Length: 232
Ligand SMILES: CC(C)(COP(=O)(O)OP(=O)(O)OC[C@H]1O[C@@H](n2cnc3c(N)ncnc32)[C@H](O)[C@@H]1OP(=O)(O)O)[C@@H](O)C(=O)NCCC(=O)NCCS
Image 1 (cartoon, rainbow, N blue to C red):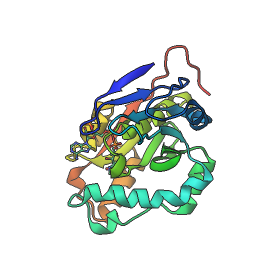
Image 2 (image 1 turned 135 degrees about the horizontal axis):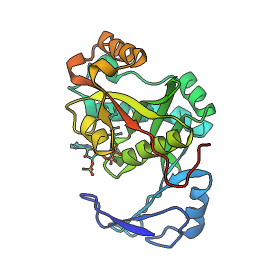
Image 3 (image 1 turned 30 degrees about the horizontal axis):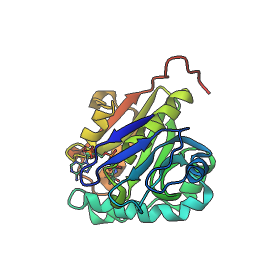
């Protein structure tokens, strides 16, 4: 099935869903098939702006070799939040130990561009019934092409299959690609009097690190299994 993607400044763009291989703009079926292996969901984007240039985007479980490349994505993406968060916070990166642990536990996904990581989503299981989306970043050079959306939806689909009731996160209220972005994906604000102790402690820790608590919000999305699907 092919959808037409409407991306400002990068038109026309085609999205190719899992299991379909065609030759467009120089992307060979064998390359597509190779890149589709071992993925949980995939999107192939072929730009026609330049017949020579084609980028294959895939969302996949992170591989050990991806891990050293993730901090630079985190730092590049943090630049989008300059003016919203203190420099000290924007300079923080997830440690390789944490990434390795998450990768081994199946709690880390990457967005690959021609097999190279350009984004990632890192989940932490901090409460028995919730999967917490601790970090999500897409390198700005690959931003606004739907990768952030696909990473979030991938996490939500995984959490539903794994039997969690909700996916939670904390984010900025007033940054367009934070709270409004998640709200469009089905997340809702958790009212202050319904915050769990764990989420309260995450918000308190953010305040300690210099984030303005008035601008922070905790959100959750209920995990809904697709019709006919069963828990893992
Ligand atoms: C949040 C983030 C992962 C989204 O990744 P992405 O691949 O760009 O996401 P998508 O392409 O699926 O959608 C991005 C949406 O955010 C909004 N958005 C992104 N950048 C924007 C900007 N500069 N101005 C206005 N809206 C913007 C738009 O609604 C956009 O959708 P659109 O392009 O269809 O209009 C990415 O922006 C990022 O890494 N940001 C920096 C780190 C961060 O904020 N992480 C989340 C903290 S909770």
